[in-house]
Image 1 (tube, helix red, strand yellow):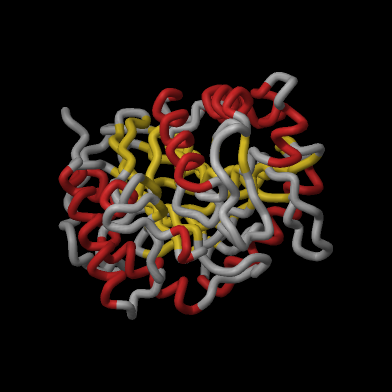
Image 2: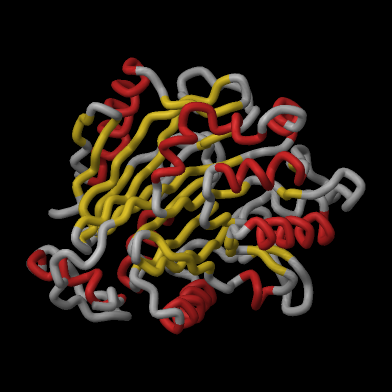
Length: 365
């Protein structure tokens, strides 16, 4: 039996009392046993600067530390690639910025391959740090490595194209958008990012998203992901505008909202049975530790699909240390659970304790 886009949603049909009908698609009966999958989502993967310096002359796979084996067990992995992958001889720094992120291809490409990264979201405020040539080289390296990408391209049309990959029998389509660094926005004939105000009250944004989702539907995916680089740094909760936009995306047919940019974990909401990860924090970087924010602690978010049902979101605690990421110890695991309970409380989200971190059930609302 072909596992279609329509059958994914049937597992939620019995929840019709708490589900609103989305504009774009019908929810129908799911055939039990149609698919199982685990798809991972992480926040910023910044492989430049000190991370690059640490691992360029070492084993690139070591940047993933003790998370590597777990990453390799996933059926798919979506990351925000914070920076470009380009040789030092290419590109000039974009004028007027403070921070510039570039990773050496000899390190970054095998590192991404080692972790079996499926999609690199590129709509962010660093992918053009070394100009058009830096972006062009990044796209070429990702393509050669078999890593699909979305959110940036040689023109606006290309930047809006969804990335499609297979995961455990599912076809997954990912769109990537950002409201950060307007100067990087792609034009009709110029390279850049899929930039737009991520605000449901903006008519141009609504029209743009619907255009992108029409492209998504043409791919007939089983699961739709919106990867969003949004909002200011160091905020521990999403704005009202972000919340409204995320829920609106679900109403339009998005199944997973994957947020990042704040560099700290924010809460998780379950809306219409779909997970909204407002900010996944950072997965690997060389940034300084900021007291009280826990920015060196985050999670691997694993979406578990069981018998075709969106079953649960597992939060596996990780820690950034010595410019690498590793599975966290029991103390940080408790911290993760307590932190996510607190930051998800405004959304009424149940965050349960698990041996390896925390779990957000998706089977009820």
